[in-house]
Length: 384
Image 1 (cartoon, rainbow, N blue to C red):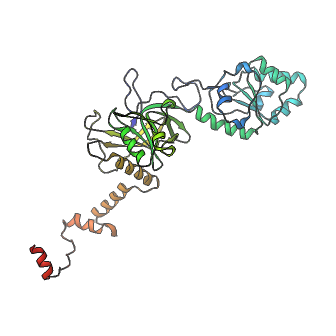
Image 2: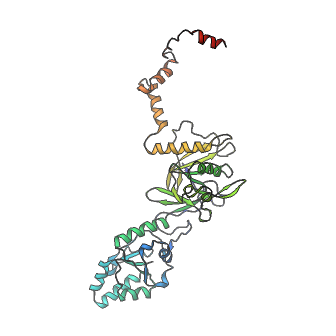
C-alpha cells in the first residue's frame, strides 16, 4: 500500500502530503490552521441563514473553535461541569433559558458566572430568545462571545456540524492534477514534466471537467471520502509547457471546470526513467492497489507513458472500469473465474470453446463448413 507521506527535510515527491492534521478535532501540529477557526471567521463565513447577532463578549471573537461537535450542556447550569470542553461551541435553547428563569437571583448569577467562567469559545442562544441580564453580564466579564440565532436548536446544531466538519477537516496539499472523467474524480500523479497537464487538457477538450492543476488541496469528509479542489490562486488555470498558464474556464466555458470533487481513483503516470521501477505494471488487472491519503485507501493504478500512446483514451477507460467495479462488475476477475473453470474441466457455456482450446490444443476445433467450388466468376477473380 502506497503512503502519501514525505520525509522531513527531503524534497517533496509527487503525491507527498505537505500538511495534515488529525480528524479528532484536537489541536495538532499539521494542517494549514492547526488550532481551528476563530469565532469571527464563523460569523463571516457561515451561511447568512444563521442571522447571527453578537449579544455580548465581542472582545472574545478571536477565540478558536477546535472541534466540530456542538455541546448542549444544560447540566453546566446546575454546577456539573464535567465533560464541558472550552474549544467546542456551547448551545443554549429555550429549555435552558427557562430553567435559568426559574432560579432566584443569587442562584441565577452563580449559575451564569460558573458557566461563563469555563471560558467556552462561544455560546449560542437558539430560537431567538432574549439573553438574561445575568448571562449577558457573565459573558461580558469573561470575554465569552454570546451569539444569537433565530433558528431552532436542532437546525442550528446540524448546520454548524456541516460547516465545521468542512472547515476543521484534516487537510493536505499534494502535487498533481485532479480531473473529473464521467463523474469519476481521477487524481493524476507522476514526476514533473511527465505530461499530467497535457493529459488533463486533452480530456477537457473531450468534454471532461478540470478540478485542479499542479497544486491539489485535499480534505477528509466523513464517512471515508477525500475531497479535492484547486488552490485559491490557481483555480481554473492550467500550465502547458510552451503555452504558459491558461484559463480553462475562459477557453472552454463554465462546464469545463468543477469547484471540488471526490478522489475516486489515483493514476500514477510512469515511464522507463522513473526510479520506482518501470516494470511494476499490472498486466491482468487483478491486483488491488491503494493510495493511502488522509486515512482513506483510494484505488490506484500505474499506467506507463510512452510516445504515441493515447493517454486520454486510456484514462477514460480507467474511469469507466472504476465505474464498473463500483457497480459490482470486475471484468478481470470474471475472466479469471472463467479461466479457472475451463482449466478444472467444468466449463461454462460461455467458456466451452476456450476450454477445448486449452485442453486439446485446438484438436476439438469444429470443422469448417465445406466451401463451394469456385464458379467461373470467382475463379477468374483469383486469376487476376
